[in-house]
Amino acid sequence: MRRGIRRQRPALAIATIALFVAVGGGTVYAAGKISGKQIRPSSLPGNRVMLNSLPGNRLVPGSLPGNRLAPGSISSDLLAPGAVSASQLAPGSVTGVQIDVATLGQVPTAVHADTADSAHDAQTALNAVNALDAVRVNGHSAGCAPDTRFFAGACWQTTSSEAAVPAPTAAQACATQGGELPQALALTAFSQQPGIVLANGDEWSGDIPSYTAPNAYSVITVKTNGEITSAAFSANHKYRCVIPLVT
Image 1 (cartoon, rainbow, N blue to C red):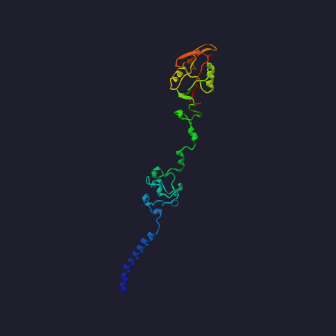
Image 2 (tube, helix red, strand yellow):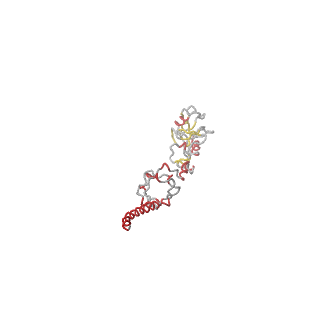
Image 3 (cartoon, rainbow, N blue to C red):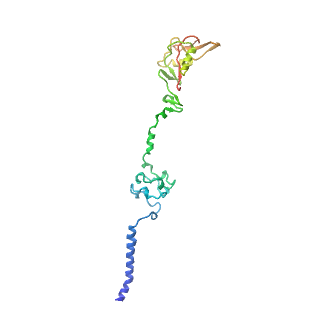
């Protein structure tokens, strides 16, 4: 009997060890927690992370280097809203390569970029390509006032003055309005525009064809039919002014 028991002890010992390994090494290990050290670098693909399951407080500050992230692997639906802060990312480690930009929404403050915050800034156009469409150019008003027409780069009055005056008086009146008398050939061309009729009795231009002595000169005038002639500066004729587009 004693000899039989002694023969069974080695087998019993081996069985006991096997049972201990199975219980301790299998069940106990399975019940334990898996630490980050047990996960190989780059071994956890994004499709193994449940949506919204990764809160920022589970990441050690500076522990998430960008070179451990597959290109395009960070999408907004994998992160709980507001979960990951800058402290969880290694400085300078995450670039646009790692971010799936298709999953990002509009930046909140960028909504204001859809419409100008201040329309006043749009009214001041520096060096406008087309000054007709600008309200302001380099801080000056731009555009033609009522009863004027854009022609040859300026605003021309569509009707002549009511009173006939000497040439110097006409020039002074235009200067007061920020303009000047038109050149003779330009006035002739303007008279050919639709709806434009020059005054009867000629209109003053700004051209002086002859000068003989102080207060002895003539000024070119343009007739209703566009014919160019001249008259003494002291004669009385009607006039129209040419106002710059920008004042």
